[in-house]
Image 1 (cartoon, rainbow, N blue to C red):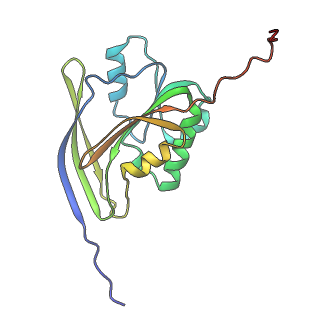
Image 2 (cartoon, rainbow, N blue to C red; image 1 turned 90 degrees about the horizontal axis):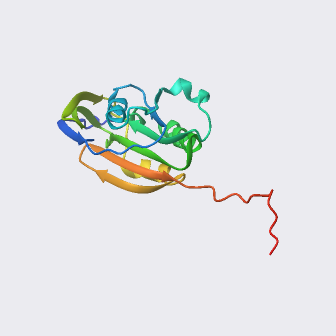
Image 3 (cartoon, rainbow, N blue to C red; image 1 turned 135 degrees about the horizontal axis):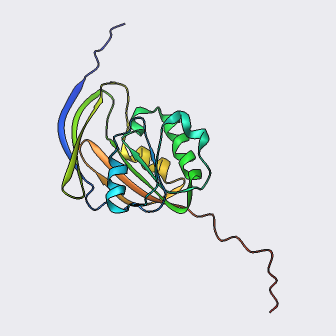
Length: 188
């Protein structure tokens, strides 16, 4: 049996993400593998009384259902396997209040592609922060369309952007509908 070498393509790139006008409302949960502090800084600049909680994977069981208005995933889905991504998106659907939001930035990466990115995040007040993103796993893949499909099970997509190396999705949680108040009597 002849073994064919894997065609590896390393992408070294500099990317800019403009968050100067990012509008995040209410109680926010920042879900990630690594805390860059970016979401907290942006929210703090926009509102002095903002509540931002950072959550890593092991703490997911501590989260209250329907407690948050917005969930932010900043370059964390690409670090997870397909089944773990699906479970996380489903869990987030239960953390977010009816009509709350999910906001995602992540890599667009095909198998065989190695990524070494320098990402400059532009923030309000003319601040910026540079983060380094590396994914050198040749079999790991993540595409906006796959994540979009997972998100659509629990959220309506309200905004999306895709570039050569990263993507952005924003969605609003599907409501469960209006519950009828059983304590009142309709006397018409």
